[in-house]
Image (tube, rainbow, N blue to C red; front, side):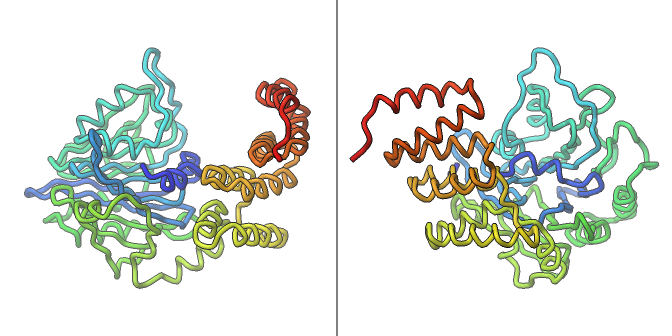
Length: 404
């Protein structure tokens, strides 16, 4: 997988799932008269949305995923398999003895390795999946099969509905069977589907429009999937007047990439602009894009400006994780001087940060600055006297001459 895309995924990673509202996201899966579809409202308190394209590789299916900077949150693969997620209140999940724990990017891994609902069930039966402690996973495939994977009443359950459709929102269905449920979005979606006479895009569009959210956790995008034909109808920030149509096969032929979802649309809703202006923006993706387009001087200048701005308004997240990840990425790109400048700034902002001091040490060593590296290693040992790497590196450094 492209390193740049993985970097974007890694910065926020699974931590983003924790900010998904427990009153958010409506998913519907349906099969009727030979038509198989799924629809999703992604309700999220973070508006930097993206589309991720991963072509097939040997032994791995191709897929398109939608999400936000740092985390794909659902999508469809070239076998007609769909998956998404609904945040729920803590479920009390406990691992089963003898099963390996799962660590990874769950939507990517399932869509690239599974072809059917049965495959996904086998996947969940194989692993202890900690995310079931806060997320339930609706899944559907082109055959018309669907289920929701959830942890309820002390076990992993694979919930199916008896009719031609299945709605999934933010509560455990195992705890609330029938139609007397604690979620208005579920009741509304169920009412719309129960009275429908045909399955098509207008039906799901009306359902997603009726259940969209505004306010603190707005609907940042909506998707309608045709699982048999591999097409996706996409809407941006609950504006159902403009749709973008994607053909999975055609898009994957263009290669692996990640693009900002709003750039696909002609109209940027005013509600989206207002919401984004009120958000604390992650500095990693902003600064990395600037670095790749304009270089080191531009990114260091912008970072300095961000640091001044946060004294008056907390518009950017320039915390230890964001800037540390940026410095790590720039270091991996072979630019130790810029990485060092970022690590040094980070160490001044967070003087007790061991990762910042380690970053400074590594870059000073790479640049041949022996005395500065030794000072930073010594500071690491003050913070963590048992740090073996710092101790051994300092000993080795004392034996080596400085670079000329």
